[in-house]
Image (cartoon, rainbow, N blue to C red; front, side, top):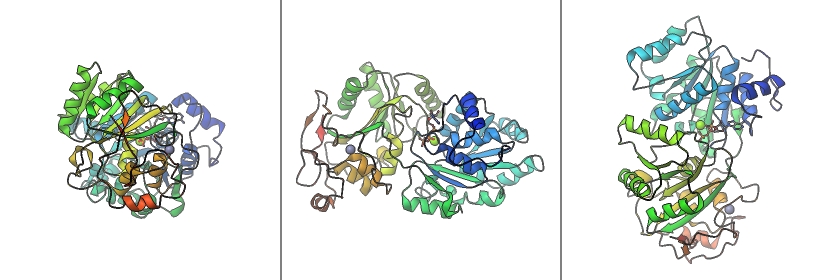
Length: 456
Ligand SMILES: Nc1ncnc2c1ncn2[C@@H]1O[C@H](COP(=O)(O)OP(=O)(O)OP(=O)(O)O)[C@@H](O)[C@H]1O
Ligand SMILES: [Mg+2]
Ligand SMILES: [Zn+2]
């Protein structure tokens, strides 16, 4: 695939460094990015498990530029495809998304360009790739003129984690291998525990040594949990005190809440817009592009917003209530600090006991995952609790969480109180036997084993 031959897995060649600088404007590869790229250039499959915001997209953009063949990228959301398309345009890489909302003529014009060597990347939803006759049509368009050189599955955890309910079609993506047997497969995700990783390898028929695991820690993020009976005031206070004028995502549990929060913030002089799946497509697209280009914009959104969205300068992600799972919380909070500078992930716990945990009411009546509950209730380091959900142990000292940083002084509106959070059934056991290495002796614990949460 690489005209320069087999690259070293460790050391980028001079030519590759130059390409990175000239085309991507970046001084060096980050983390294990180059290892992923080098393996692909050798024609090997890769399951890339790299943290949120670490630059997984570059792992396919870079090889796409080098080769003469076509790169196919499967991506779960239109908004994400649009975001990638915009990025490709900025980089001067020819690529298009084929998605709903386009006219038949527009789609045909995109397909007609596929045989051109200058056209590098085609972005597709899994539903389209797997729709009846699509792959036959794609092969017919390319027939004899051009090959598919790289297959990419972005947000690959959808294969395993949500496969049954959310995107059953992701589970069929292994069929792509049979259709394009010569092309290496790159599956990328920022959240997969050991079970999910094993399932991914199995469903996508990848060899066991395909995994490149960089660890999921995001040292630039400071994790906090606080309890409040006035979430709107609390979110506004935190924003104004810690991050005045900063781009922020505020995750709400319900659609109506996004509207209420956006209005409340605007009334208090903060530029905010609502975003949820019930809004018309053009309003969503407008809100999204407003957020991406506006410094200091606040998006009050349900979880319909944000997967893979790359706004580097988001300084704060606030959650009004826990996410449906720890993996979901990691993904959502991971939208902060993508430029590598310090950022905050604040989770506001409702002061009233509540039945459902998931934002947008997705798990109303149920309870959020055990790992998420452990994160809320932990007596030790939040970061350690978060990483434990991915079967990872915190290697370096915690870079910042509300339990590990005694130097953190809450803003004037905060005061400590006992958390009226519904105790998890196993909370008492955890209190008696805290996980090894996790209890850093933070002050102020309740008898249920929950920490005393900060209250607004
Ligand atoms: N080598 C690098 N050095 C510095 N910045 C980089 C590097 N590679 C990528 N980036 C930047 O990192 C940011 C995040 O990239 P990207 O959107 O690909 O992250 P991601 O890993 O896909 O995150 P997510 O899991 O949330 O989808 C982008 O702004 C990108 O320009
Ligand atoms: Mg991404
Ligand atoms: Zn910590």
